[in-house]
Length: 409
Image (cartoon, rainbow, N blue to C red; front, side, top):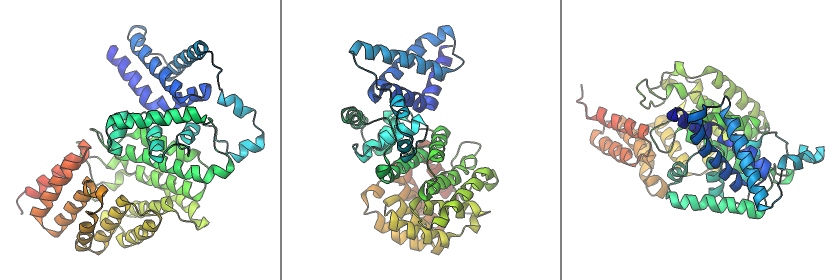
């Protein structure tokens, strides 16, 4: 029974943390207090559930216990309770409309995490911790930071929220565009962590992908919001085909496209088509257009790599970021030959964030393999495997390396 209780608490903490925490934040207006009382409720669950049994609604039980603990804390401290929901209910209808009053606690909490008073790197880390329940170790791995440094970053962010008295509310209309852009960035980072975990033994985390999609669907239907939602839907459609029955990573070339989820593809294509008439293509719409070309290709050999390469060229004008540049080089190589890509990869080694990235060395290994340069490909696969922090990705690279060692037939 103790094991069942531990599993139930862990499941609730992973699946429902964001919802429970956001509800506590709405009640108390203090993120630090909300986290503390939720942690206390989890400890009580581990003590009681092995004896009393798991409640029918574990999330509601944790929420109730945490709320009572919070009320006790507030009374002992002699403080008043800031009930953000009560404050919002008193606002005029015009103000609520201006703030795009989306009735979702987790979305409000996301906007708090993305407040301009917080440093950009702290915004992302805080959202991953509070909304998605990622551990400090998982987030530190994603950022390439020491766990202690990441803990301090989160602590400073929560202290800043308390000191600046950041309200538990959506931003006013003039601040909406800037805040929305950061919210989209954070949502996609959440999705990306679920689609391809930065570390650990699991490649996919469906809970994070589902939460990102849910948040994306709540936002107003602006072109870039639609672009992000379409991108996530089209990428999520490949989920069932990304791992073999043995749990091995499969690339786009290796995947059985019959396993791709046609309902998600259809929804993603429809959302993208709704965004395009606005004629204001941003980075998410461009990435969704690239994903759409993959989705429309019945087989890997039918992929329109020339069009994908052209779209990456446009995307780089919006986001000249290292990983996008790397993907653009790969697309160029697929469209015009491995030699073109290898020449560009040599230049990318001068980019510090790519030189130590397993993605660059994996790309080089694949292009060298396509050229038939076995010794160089083996070395590149070995380097990529050494740098990969996710066990599934590392096993894929070692598998490729082993295949390269097999005698030619």
